[in-house]
Length: 92
Image (cartoon, rainbow, N blue to C red; front, side):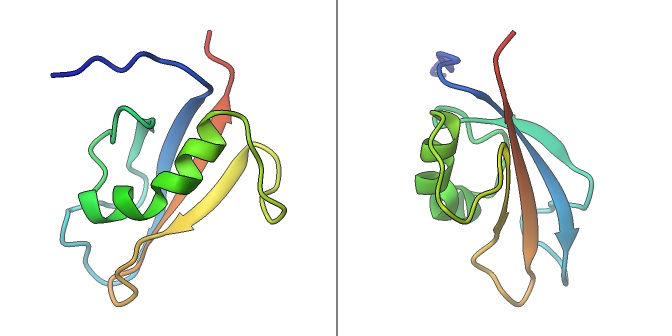
């Protein structure tokens, strides 16, 4: 298995809500580290969908509608909607 080179900012993902039933088993309160090299156990569909935002976020970029070092993203399955909060910080 490839090793995460731990470049860029550290990003922690937290599942903040689940509407319906997540087919990948994500539950509100689940927390894990995620990066461009490590999906951290996030559903493949969700990871694929958020990857462009994740790469911008991990490497210190911002988009006009982001507020600081926290962003909210949503699963592409709107019927069983999972909402995820990403928080970035400097690596220690």
